[in-house]
Amino acid sequence: MNHEQGRGPIVKKVFVAVIGVAFLTLGVAGVAHASLTEFVTFVGNVGYSSDGFGSTGQTGTISASVPVGATVLNAYLYTGFFGSLAAPTATLDGNAVAFGPSVFNVTACCGLGSARADVTGIVKPIIDGGPGGIYNFTVTEGFGGQDGEALVVVYSHPALPVATVGILDGFSAVGGDATAINFADPLHPADAGFFAEMIIGDNFSCCGQRSTITVNGVTITENAGNNDDGIGSISNGQLITVGGFDDPFSPLLPTYAEDHERYNLVPQITDGDTTIAVTTINPSHDDNIFLALFHVFGRAGINEPPPPPTTDGVIPEPSSMLLLGSGLLGMAGFGRKRLIKK
Image 1 (cartoon, one colour):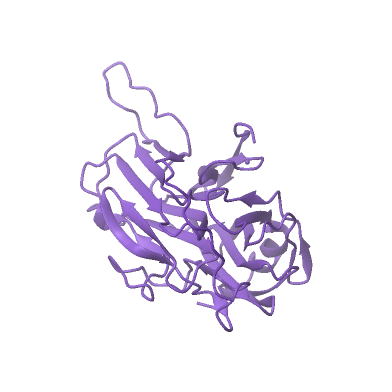
Image 2 (cartoon, one colour):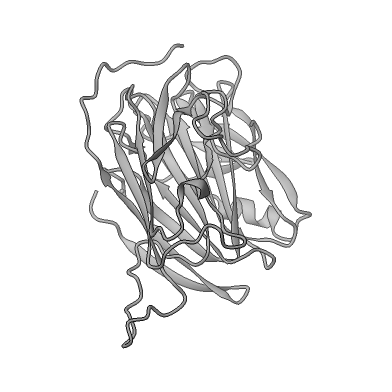
């Protein structure tokens, strides 16, 4: 597809009415020194769009797919880089993008890292009140060491079911990492309209470099990675892949080419489960999974405790969910550090 933080977290909660349903956002500031960590979550009649772009020409098109009548809640532009780039830069539709601090994957080779910018002020005026469909934005990188970008747009629409969009960022430790989505009430995947999906963004990946992802003990892929969103010859500067709006779900145990970094998690959920446990490992220690996004049916809260039981022991509605960007499973030796083919 080619349209496409230091100390403990500081959490800010904001409650906003979204078409009669409250949604909750939790922001984490600072520079991540651990693994993928929850950044923000939205609960309500919400959906998302994601897309990726990379090019050694350093400019091209990155896109969002948003239905007519939708309202953009927030939009984020990520950039993935190599070579310990301290201050990546970019423009989006000619507007300078202000990236936050670079987050380095200290478990991987080659100075890999990422940075995030809030681009709501650029994206929202174009999409809100627009015709719906695919919106194209011109993205231009400031440095050749930037592998590419990911654009994530979260929106509300009255026709959508109540759902949760949770965004985790930072990095996934190459020696083994874990994220657990823990539910207060059991899941029932056979319920009408139930869905659970995940996308990842990965940079500095190509040429057989890959990660393994396991969900609830089932290996769903051994081939996450590649430069699916890169344009031009395979070389440093365009090595990025992002699960996107125009990508199909990856099949179970896909080939390297079949893995689109977008996954349907429903088959790995058994009726009555209260956890979706996701683990990742990058045996070659040279990929950087810098983004994970979950879209799950129903109300949820990032890092919120479940509601207390009533006096008769019954959990009140609505049920709560904990989405925990959690810690390391343990790091193996970093192995031989290498830069990919130029």
